[in-house]
Image (tube, rainbow, N blue to C red; front, side, top):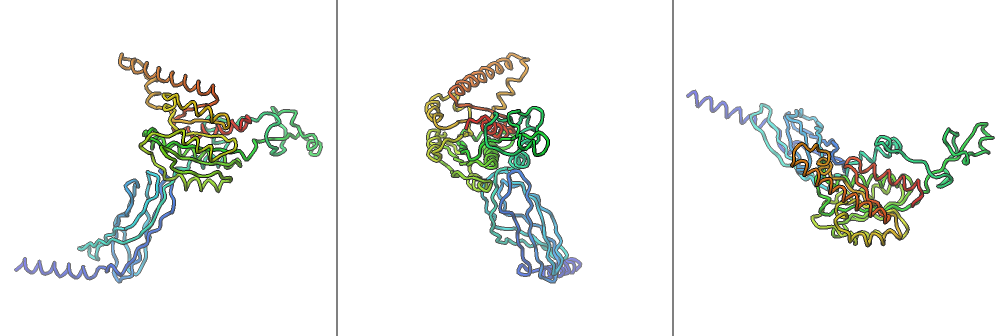
Length: 406
């Protein structure tokens, strides 16, 4: 009898608790998400739950996010009756691309908590994960500070070259030939003319997304760092008033952003290349270079982000690169091999370590010899650590303009 009575009471309370929970038609949910977010940057999303029923409830949910997103969900959120509550949560996207988020999976408990219901709500949305722009923002905030932080500086131009910029006070070290005597007489102090590189130059950025660009680094792969460095270089050129075009290629041409001017063109470049991925095929360099020359008829500076080792071990690329050098200024940038550098810096404590170090040194010296050979033909090749690739590209671009080579 006791078991029967206890069971009846539990069933009665459970049934009452079930009817005292909100019905799925008595509340609504709306997600708020940004259109774009940067890779590796935490982004805040939110959902607004509106409870129209006469009963309160506790809510927990999971969003229909891709696996490359790392979310942090709150748990057991209380929603009062006849009220609306906004629930915020953080996500950290790891991979670039365009992603669709279609559903929200929500569980809510009844008043006493004996029942928990699950509802799948359709909330179609789209989020674009663009490359990380931290290096670009640092450059646009202060170009000189950005380069000095990396141990580099913008060099002075040759005397009398470039476009007139402004008149400023004379300081020790300025060229006396650039003193503006008219303004000096007017202000009763020595004034000098300042020049800056000419604007309106053409820069063509080629990004290799072939098989060798998929080598993994500590953060991302070679293609990720190359894309971020290319965007920083494009921002520097656009901020200087130059025209910038971008070509992404592997075996075929993957994406093209035609030449444009002004910082608003940076968004066009971002929307063109933000979703490019590594292709598992060998890169077709002749096709890419020929397409870049077709895209840009005027003399320009062509910057190629690729794997230097590919050119070191394949000499046939030198032929069509020499043809390119007759009309354009060429520069190739790659990411140095951290494993090779680590092996070279080891202390030869054992015979095995000494053998590995000697082979690594031999490979490094051979690579430097080939790079010197290319540079003698007017085709410089530079390698930089992954975290310094962007500043190396921007520094070389500024030095090229200051020396009047373009």
